[in-house]
Amino acid sequence: MIPLVPIRLPIGMARSAAFCGVLLLGSQALSSAQTQAFTPKAIHDEIAYLASDGLKGRDTGDAGNEKAAQFIARLFAKDGLKPIGTSRERDATAPIDGSGYYQPFTFLAGHRIGKSSGLTLDWTTGGPTSVAGVSAVHHAGAVEVTLKDPTKVRPSGVSGEGRAEGDIVFAGYGIHAPRIGHDDFAGLDLKGKVLLVLAGSPGDNPHGPLTSYSGILRKASAAFDAGVKGILVVSGTGDELKSERFEFQRNEDAGMPIMRIQTDVAEAILGTPLKPLIELANADKAVSRATGVKAQLSPDVHKINKTTANIVGLIEGSDPVLKNEVVVIGGHMDHLGMGSQYSLSKTEEPAVHHGADDNASGATGVMEMSHYFGPKTLAHIKTKRSILLICFTGEELGLYGSEFYVKHPIVALDKTAAMLNMDMVGRLRDNKLIVVGSSSGSYFDDLLAEVNKTAGLTIAKSGGDFGGGSDHESFENKSVPVLFFFTGTHEDYHTPTDTVDKINCEGEAKVLKLVADCAVNIADRADKPVYHKNEKPVQTGGGFAVYFGSVPDYAAQVTGVLLNSVRAGSPAAKAGLKPGDIIIKFGDRTIKNVYDYTYALQDHRPGDSVPVTVKRGNEEVTVTTILAARSQ
Image (cartoon, rainbow, N blue to C red; front, side, top):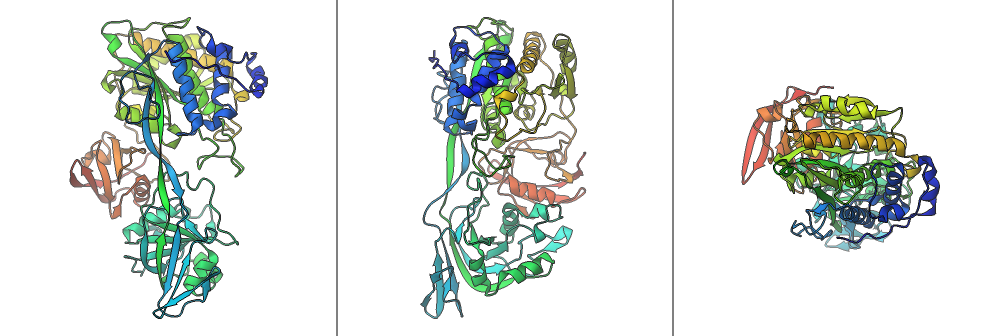
């Protein structure tokens, strides 16, 4: 058994306990031999630790996330859960041998820049005497300037690795949107060239039709298909080119070198002031042209891979046959750390994003299930089927942990009777609980009605749409019946103010008891719930007008888009696409990543006939699909 290390809770947490009507007793509740489940005090104490300043927001792959995982693993051990993972939390190559509670894996966490980035500019005729304070060098009738000052030129946070060299072509805002009447690439030969573009979109109107084309990833996606080798983005107008917040924490990669440059550098390339060109571009006038300047981009950018781990523990069932099947109860334990591109904070300053509701409340729910079902607990509720508890990591990055689990299940998915997911279950208001996925299991509607006779909650069901942006989606995509429990969003969502003092501990206790009752019912029935496929196209956002029916694996580190599943009856299914296919071309768009794929879908309309090329094993297969309209 892994020893339980006492937890010291900050004084500020003791004050916040008053909301739950409890008195904190340091680590006493967590270090006692047996812990009663679903008490407001236990719920508060566990959330308080996970959401403490010391864990710094539990960002996936960071030290605070590791501490949270260790805390949960120790609790699983104390409650007598069977270890079915590895004891080597940070070793993604470790065998899953039952030595511990971890299921580790690696992921792309972002990029770092070195000190060797540079931009070399060559004028074969004419040329300036200096650029951005750097004197020009004359050789063989040409003028060359090499810039290394990061306040004047620096890699973009989405730059690919390597170098790019070619003639520079100015293309205004670099927006290629011919279907809506705007094309900065029109009339330009871009093959083998370096593209110089303005950041943003004309006028930077947040409600304009070109706003969705303003991001550098979308511009790079279109430029790649036009044969562009690298991109220079004019993104500084002051005296200093500053790094954007969280710029290098992003896990996107444009697939080509991209560098940001200061205005005076752009003006040296263009040989003219930039302001009149911006005014013309904002008025939708043509400004694109060749510059007569060559460039060599050398961004010193390196990918950062980190290791993180799910936490898994098993409570074996009592029935000699049914114990080979499991009911999964899960919730993610990661959050946003000190902030990220997903933060909704009103300040640019780094701050602990405590994530008390999102999702220390759900991870605590899993720990409370350990107290309820664990063999060494006071309750020790026995069930015929086994109960598998999982605290997922990487959910905020795109369901990384649950996607990894369903691709590498420790218990076979065909032996998984159901998955119950808790995400943001700590803010029960007006006694209302949202439950998603009730139509995914053959008897789930009746089940919820039965268990709620005791709970007395007002349940708002969303049975026909199994989405919801959380870990149950990974299981539903593998045809496992799911129930997703959620007490609703709030103004503190993804901000530093999602703190433990705002948790309704008594309300969460009611929710957790209902979840446990659902688990017991499913685990004790002779019949597994029969999975019912959701045929309704799931609205996934992004302004799509079309429906294709593919479900990407957002965590896969492949060139292209790996399909987790294909929805029955969808255009993708009718075209013959299969789970495991990797989309590498959609129409005339090369697909390097999920962003290229998103932009390709957005560029099409219902009824379009589109050739789609996929890698299937060692072969490339091209099919034709007719895109459908998306249901709202």
